[in-house]
Image 1 (cartoon, helix red, strand yellow):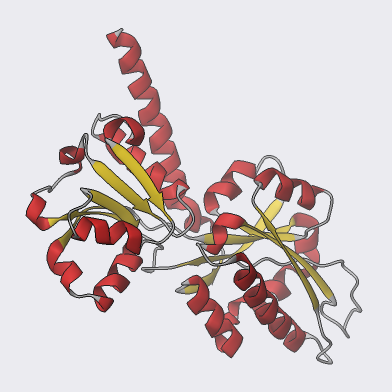
Image 2 (cartoon, one colour; image 1 turned 45 degrees about the vertical axis):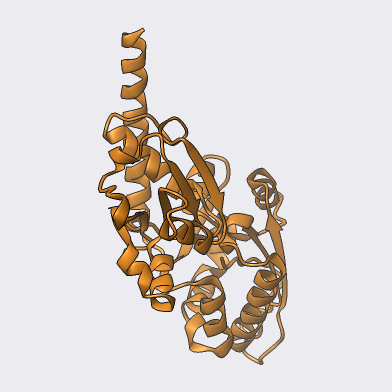
Amino acid sequence: MIVLSTNQHTRAAELFLSSLRLGFTIDTISGVDVNDARAAQELWLRTALQNMNKNNEPVDVQITVYSDLSLLINAVKEHELDAVTLLPLEYLSLQEDVSLIPIITSYSGDSDGEHYVVLTHRENNIQTIEQLQSRNIIVGTRGDKKVPQLWLDTMLLEKSLPETKAFFKSVKYMRKTTQAILPVFFKQVDACLVPKTDFETAIKLNPQLSVGLQIIAESPGFKSTMTCLRSDFHDQHGSHLTQAMETINQTEQGKQFFTLFRVSRILRFEEVHLDNIKNLLQKNQTLSQKSAHRQIEGQ
C-alpha cells in the first residue's frame, strides 16, 4: 500500500529526496476509496520523508493508481516509476518482466499474515468443506480476491473435488466483508469466505455472530502487500527509504494510515515472507495437473 520513487534529482548530503513518483495497484488498497488512499499516502510520505531531509526540505510526492498491471510494469521500465506497491501474487507474476527489489511487506492479522476462513451457521450442521457441494458461498475480500480464491481452489483439489466454480451452486463476491458474513448468520447463504481479522472485528461489534457462526476451514497466513524499488533506484536510495517506511507508526499520520488500510505491521522484507504463497502456488499447480490427468483417464 506504500510506494516510493524519485526523479533522482537530489543534493547529496543536503537533501535526501526532493521528488517521489509512486505507483500502486488498485487491489492493494483493500476496498479503500482511491482518493482517500492517495491522500493518506501522500500526507504520510511527505511528512516522513521531509523529516529525513537534512534541512527539512519539502518533498513533492506524486502517486498513480494502476488498475492494469501491464501499465505499471511499462511505467517502471520507462523509469516513470521507481517503486511500486503490489500484491505478492502480482510480484511473483512479473518477476521475469521487470527488475524490482522488495524492501517492505505489510499485513493484517497474526504474526504470519492474513488468514482466510470459511464460515457456516452452526444450526445448518455443515462441518466440512465437502458438505458445501452444490451450495451457495459469498467471498468477501475487501479487494484482493486472488489469494482466497486460489486457496479455496487448492483446498478443494486436495480433497479430489472440483474447483470453486464447479463445486458450488453459486459464488458471489463482495468487497464489504459484512455483506458476506451477515447473510450466513441470517441463514440466507450457506457459507462465506472472509479474512479472519474481519470476522473477529465483526464479533466485537456483534458478539452474537460467534454464537451463530463457526469456522470450518482456515488458510495459512499471507502477507498483504509488498513495496519494491526499481533495482537501479534501490542501489542509491534503498536503505534510506526502508528506514523511513519502518517508522510509519511513529507519527500521527502513520497511525491514521494503519487504521485506514487495516494494517497490523510493516516489516523489512525477507524471502521467507513469500514462502506461504509460493507453497500455495506450487501445490495448486501440482494438484491441477493431477486433476487434469484423472479427467483424461476417465474419458
